[in-house]
Amino acid sequence: MIGITSMYITKNTPSDIKSISYSLTGAETANGNGNSKNVNEEGTTIVKYTVCNNAGTCSDSAKINVKLDREIPLVSVV
Image (cartoon, rainbow, N blue to C red; front, side, top):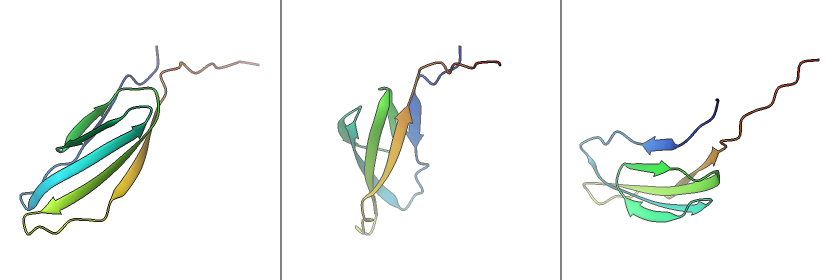
């Protein structure tokens, strides 16, 4: 069987990073802090995140689209 069962989003945290906050909307919803989050729901989930350093400077919010599809592809041989 071919398919993706989950996607793991992570960021190796350098020592000058104080926090990473995120929000998920779409197929899966969540809010949280940390450098990792499992996305398990099939469909499209939008992950928005902000990173702050130890000096208190925070990045602009960024986003990525995570598309998870567990359906097995069908191939026709002609």
